[in-house]
Length: 238
Image (cartoon, rainbow, N blue to C red; front, side):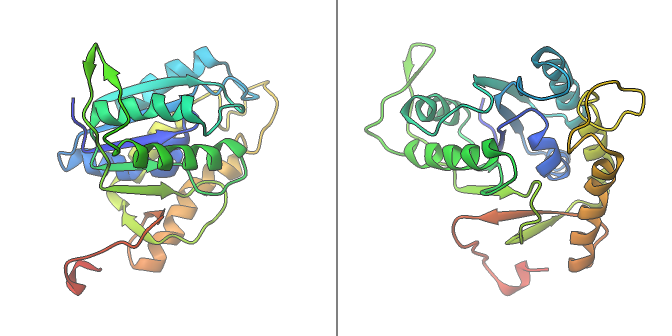
């Protein structure tokens, strides 16, 4: 299956928090989108790897993605090395995405920055013809995505561009809150974490609203890039 967009996150819920509304918008426009989670979030304070898996499936259904996979890398301890790069190269070549969305280049959680660099490096290496990989016994063709964009997470990084997601913010919130063990629940007896407070849940919308305010729309999601974004005409810019 060829995907138009492949969204990759270090942990289940990273993609939903970072670019869930953008994904919902692109799917509504007819694009095929997949999600790959690098780890099962097994070191998370709240919930378990098993509950996160069930929540991931529910969230994927809400967003309407075509496929969701987990690389089963070690939460907190995966590395940007040949072993992990090769595993991702196989997935990139399998799905042949035009666009890859991945973790913030710098963030509070160490896995986010690591995941960002790992995905960027794998996307580049996937385009090298002398790296041989196989899928289901067949030699894979080289493939390099046209674009790699990094969504914004905990740190309020300055975006290089934003996407108007005004009509899809509620879908994003529903997909995020599918991870019910992770976010605000006054009935929960689990330990509190930086993302389990009502303030954090509220911040998902008000940060998107603030980005939207700055560009004249109701809600927006921001992305950073590793290279310049090119447009065909000045009129492509809103």
